[in-house]
Image 1 (cartoon, each protein chain N blue to C red):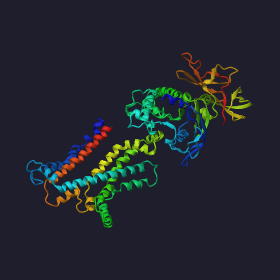
Image 2: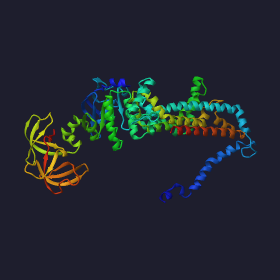
Image 3: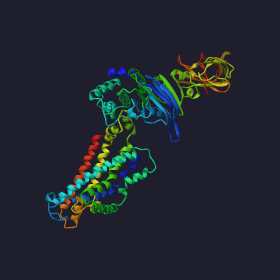
Length: 366
Length: 267
């Protein structure tokens, strides 16, 4: 199987062109166009009902797009049946065949493709090793734990060497510890096999941890596509900023624009630089976002970007969250890492100043 | 305390009702079995133990004939009914619900609701016409008639199984390069097997047991075991009839037991 691994090192590239999907009167996907690159770990991230699973099913062939095309390596596969697509799925509930053993489950795809018994046996053996289930081939799948079933589902989907592996929230049924280790495992498998992974999740942390690129979706549309860093530090719009992590929104006035930087004035009168998405030129009143860990609480000083009073302090072990009531009445949260034990240096009611790290403010599109 | 008070077994009259039910169900059967070993010619006067009526029944060519005919009809009817029921169950569960689906359920289960005597008379009239037109008067009519009323019995367990089956499994098979036929062959059918066997056995027993429709539809010399026994009751009866019934009972019980163990082994 090692020889085929080299040929499979080219995962397939998926092109979604103008995809629309209606279920009766409900539009699940609204004009989505995406290019998923070969060999990449691509995540569709969004709340439930955003259309991410429908999109995945259209790549798998379980649903047909009402409009638009699904391309695999440039070839239109929109109308092919699921069994005609070199694409395999890891299902949310695993969907293992309960009447078959672990090995029979893993070998199912190859058997359907008419491979010889000896080839199936050797691939199954490799797959069992790959997912650390050596020697469990003859077990009934019904006797495995959730984590083991998950591994069998992965091995079953990987065994026929698909060009693209689709994963539909495969970790959601696992407990936290197992989920963490499976995240690492998935990333390892993706690198080792070179297969393009398309991963669907509503868990932003999962997405940030594993993905090469993320598409954030909401109400059937793609809001932003980018690396985890882009999505987290440079959210283009309020939905993305709000959905990924915690954040502070501030209303500001744009003073001047040069390149992809603008100079903005906060309600406190302070002026700071802010970055904006490439496709807009900000003017007038706009919203900026500042992540809680990109701000510092200090003693009040004339040079502070913002000023306010400490409203609440929440101790979270590794961090402390300081909830500040700004002078204009709005709230602001600062996340401070707990470098030393004991108190954070402030107490409720203290007058404080807030400073930003350089270049952390991001102007939103809407 | 709480559970004890609401335990069905502690309700007043529970013991009596249980005993009564068991007696009502099994006492006549026990009497029938006991008298099948009666040495005397009477159905009510005990004349000592003997298995001579079993030997007599076994050697009675009319009984042999009727028994073989019953088995042939039941096998064919169960086979055809199970096949039809499986296709009907697939068609009614592997689809988006639509208007008229409930009507179809009712249509498939119609033999459960229409009085058997009505079906019997209707079949008699239709088949007698066909007999005149075609000149054919073989077992085919009985097999067709039995198949028809066996379908709902085979349909119900298969449909129940299909409804509780995870549809993602079939989707997973399709995802793993199985054509629709291969999906059916390698996933749906193996998972349905216990329900299909249950449906088949139910249909088989129901066909074996039928009197009313058979009595109306059969041509001369086409007695099945139940209609033969009915015919015997009109004449002087001997414990031979008990012996036949006892074998009949043993056969049905054996079927149920076999099915039970097949199912148990699967799990």
